Each structure stands twice: as C-alpha cells, then as structure tokens.
Amino acid sequence: MKAVILAAGQGRRLAPMGWDKPKCLLPCGNCTLLNSTLQSILEHGIRDVAIVVGYRRELVEEAARRHAMNCEFVVNEDYATTNTIHSLWLAREYLNEGILYFNGDVWFEPPVLSLLLQSAGRRRSALAVEVKRCGAEEVKVKADPSGRITRIGKSLPPEEALGEFIGVGKIEHSACASLVESLRRYNEELGRKDCFFESALEDILDRQAFMAAPLGGLKAVEIDTPEDYARAKSLISTNALERWGD
Image 1 (cartoon, rainbow, N blue to C red):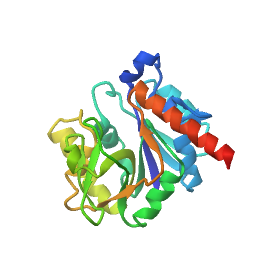
Image 2 (spheres, rainbow, N blue to C red):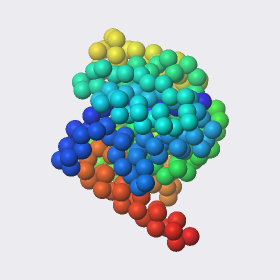
Image 3 (cartoon, rainbow, N blue to C red):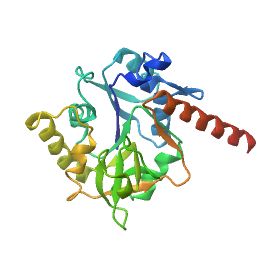
Image 4 (cartoon, rainbow, N blue to C red):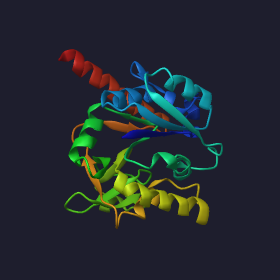
C-alpha cells in the first residue's frame, strides 16, 4: 500500500493562538503532527507517500524529506477556496491501488494504525472511528450491526451516529475506481470543490463496503481550533506520563 496525506489547508481557525504555518507542522510532544504520522507509516513498512500540499508548501516538503521515505508532492494551488474533495481528486493517480488515507491535521496514538489494518482484514476498506456522542461539526459515521458504514458526513444527525471518523482510513484497491469516479463527478460535473471528501465517499457506500474500526481506548484528535490543540497536548502529556510510569 501507499499512503496519501492531505496537508494543503491553511488552518485559519488557529490564528487566535498566533499559528501561521501549516497545521501538520504543529508541535505535538517531541515532534510534529506530520512527523508522528510519517513515523507511524514507516513502522508499518510503508515507504511510498504522496502528500497534497498548498499553504506554505515548502515548509511541509522540507519536513517530509527528512524521513527515509519516497515522498512525492501534489500541489493544490487553490487550497484557499477548495476542500479535501479537491485535494484527493488531485492525488487520484495514487488511487490505482490500495492506500492508507490521512488528514494532515490529526494526532493519533501509534497503535491506531495497527488497529485499522487488523480490524477490517486485509481485503476490506475501513475507517478509524471514535465511538462517542458527536457534535454538529464532527464528521460522523453511521454503521449497521455488522459494522459496515452506511452513512458519513457532518450533516448526519448525532443521535444516529456511531461516532466520529478521525481522518485515518484504509481504502482497498477494489474501492478506488468507484471513489475516483465519485471525486470526478463532484469536481468536474458538479463543481463542488469546496466539499469534504466524505461527500464523494458517501455516494459509493451502497456498492463498496467500508467497515468501522472503533478506537476502543486509543486516542486521536483532529485539530481545527486552539481548543482541539490543547486537548491533543493534554492527551500526549498523559500518554508520556503513563509510559514513564511503566
């Protein structure tokens, strides 16, 4: 498998804390979000990574090249006016085989990736899900009793949701062609480049199986606001103390 990381956005909601670099370069513990993600990928034997860059892309490219990986970069020139549905469409050439998908603004414990790969089996697509009561702004998923995801998106009523998609997923080769076609429709036919990529994903859930991979006790945070960042730093500190105690 290859990995695809979406890291083109500016992260305007972090401006109140004075942050003016790409979100993936936020310090978390003794590294950055990007470093943490790339290290997790490396630990699972994956060395081929495509990173969609945009805002201050030279900083992201410089940081990624420090890793012993085959990093390729896809540039979203319209990062200020588009969303993840456009970034992933620009990276469609990498969707010709199975991929690991990452939002670049997510901190997650390293075992989350192992859980994702193991829980759904080698031939099934899966999304890492934090099972909880969700708020209006979170990307929510609904699943049937078998764990197959039937709906995904921010507009899903919280009372129907299993939990939040944390922005880390596995997309098998069998689902790639359908996803690329759905991405094409949104970008080229509908002109909806401002959508989240989950809109294109939801449109294929009736014919492509995506399983929910619940985090259990593992932790993950998608960082959009200063409050999210404070929560992530708190979890990282707690984890470090627990490891020291062991």
